[in-house]
Amino acid sequence: MILQALKEYYDRKAADPDSDIAPEGWEQKEIPFIIVLNSDGTLVGIEDTREGEGKGKRAKTFLVPQGVKKTSGIAANLLWDNAGYVFGIDNKGNNERSILQNKAFIDRLVNELGDIPVIQTLISFLQSITADRLLKESCWEEIFEKNPNVSFRMSNNTFLVCRHPDVVSKLSSLTSINQNDISGICLVTGENTEIKPLHTSIKGVYGAQTAGANIVSFNLDAFRSYGKVQGLNAPVGVEAEFAYTTAVNTLLGRDSKQRLLIGDATTVFWSEKKSLFESDFAFFFKEPDKDDPDAGTQKVRALFDSVNTGAYREDDGDMRFYILGLAPNAARIAIRFWQVGTIFEFAERIKEYFEDFTIIKPPNEPEYYSIWRVLVNIATQDKSENIPPNLAGDFMRSILNGTPYPATLLQAVIRRIRSDSEYRVKPIRAALIKAYLNRYNRFYPNKKQKEVSMELDPLQPSTGYQLGRLFAVLEKIQEEANPGINATIRERYYGAACATPVTVFTNLLRLKNHHLAKLENKGRVVNFERLLGEIMGKLQDFPAHLDLHEQGRFAIGYYHQRQAFFTTKDIN
Image 1 (cartoon, helix red, strand yellow):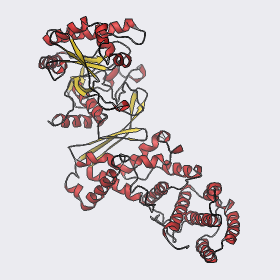
Image 2 (cartoon, rainbow, N blue to C red; image 1 turned 120 degrees about the vertical axis):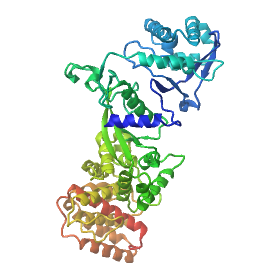
Image 3 (cartoon, rainbow, N blue to C red; image 1 turned 180 degrees about the horizontal axis):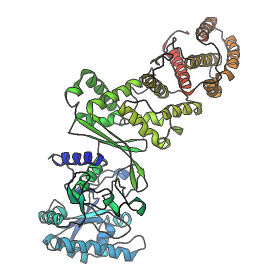
Image 4 (tube, one colour; image 1 turned 45 degrees about the vertical axis):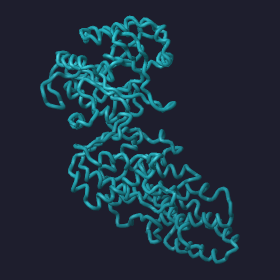
C-alpha cells in the first residue's frame, strides 16, 4: 500500500508539465562545480554553482543520469561524480584506489557513450588534463579537499553534457537494452516484469546514514526465504522501484514543503491530486518560521473556518491524503506510522487537536501549539534530542486517528513538571494535561469526572484539582508575605503535594498562619481566608496518594488558580 501510493504520487508529478520530478533513469542532484570545456576538449574554467554565504551556500540542482548505488567497491556514475572519480585525485592516502576510480569513470563513458562526438571530446579532456592546469583554477584547492560532485558543460551550450540531445537519446535506448535476467510479479503493479534486486537509497531521513538507507533491503541469509536473495524477497519491478524511490526522495528533498520532523520521525505527506491542504499541512504541526511567525496561526485559523463552513467537504474533502512517518534503523528505514484518510477527515481531527489544547494563558504565549513545541516542553532540559523516540509517532498517530493521546504523554509531562522546580506548570504543559484528560474521558466516560475547562472552575469536583488550587493559594500568600522571595513552597513541596498530599498539606496550612500574620492589609487576609474556606469546603481529607490522572488535575488546578490571580480581582 505504501509503495503503491508513492508510485501513484510519482505518476501524478510526472504527468504535471510544471513539475521538476526526474524522469525514469534520471535524478535531481546538487552539483557544486561544473567543468566548462571548449569544443577541442581544452579547459575553459571551473564554474561554481553555489549561491549564498558561508555555511548557507547551496549548489544548483541539475537533472543528471541516475547514480549507481555506492558500496565499498568501485562504481562510477555516468557524466557526473565526485572529484575522486572524475579526476582520480587522492586526499586520503589511497592513490591506487583513486586511479581505479578514474579508470572506471572513463571506461563507462567509452563503453556506453563512446560513439558520440561530444563524449569523445570529454574523454580526450579527461585523459589529457594535468594537475598543473587544474591548480590554476581558484576553486581547485577546495575541490581537492572536499571532493564534491562535479559535471561538465560545453562552452557553447547552456545545458550540461549529460543533457545533450545525442546523449539523452542514447541513454533512452540503453535503458531499454540494459535489462537483467531476473523477472517476476511486481508486488506494486501486479505485472510480470524485470525485478530490481537492489533498491535506490533514500536520503533525507533525519538520523539515517548520510549515504542513504533503504525501505526495502535484504542483505543477510537470515532475511532470505525460499532461496531468494536481495530484493527478490519483496519483488518490485524496475519501473515501480524507480517511481517510489524518486517520489520519496523528492518529498524528502531539502526544498520540499511536504516534509516535517516530529520527534525522530521524518514525516512526508501528499494528496491524491494537487490540493491546498497538501501545501498547508506542515504549518499545522511545525514551529513557525522566524521570518513569518504568524503564518502557522493564519493557516490554523483558515483550517477552523474551512471545517466549520464545510469548505473542505465541498471542495477537496473526499480526496485521499497520505501521511508517512520514517525513522532511521541502521542502514534501513523503519516505518514509524502510515495514515491514510480523506482530507476532510484529517482536517476535522487536526481541528480537534487544536481545540483540545485551548487554555487560558498569558498574552505572550502562542495562540496555537505545534507538536514540536509540545514535545520539547516535556523533554529533559527542553531539548528536542531528548524527546522519547516512540512518543512523537504515537502522539501524531493519535491526532490523525482522533483516538486518545498516549498515556506516555501524560506520564512524561507529570515527570517533567515534578523535575522542573523553576517553571513547573507552564501554559503549554497545562494545555497538554487538559487535552489528554478531556480526550480520555470522551472515550472512557466516567460520571464522577467533569471535563476540565479552559479557565478556573471552582465547581470542579476533582480532589486533585481542588488541592492544586489550594497549593496555589498557599504559595500566593507566601509570596505576598515575603516580597521578592527567591524560592517558594513550589520549589520544595510541589512534588510531594501532588503525589502524596497527606504528607505536606498539614504543615503548609500551619505555615500559612505565620504568613497571614505578616500581611499588613487585613482586607487581603480576610479575602485569602474566604478563598481558603471555599476550597477546603470541597475537600473531605488529604489523600495519601493521587493517581496519575489526579496529579494531572492537581497541575491544572494549580495553573488555573495562578492565572486567576493575574486576570481577576477576586483577591484584591
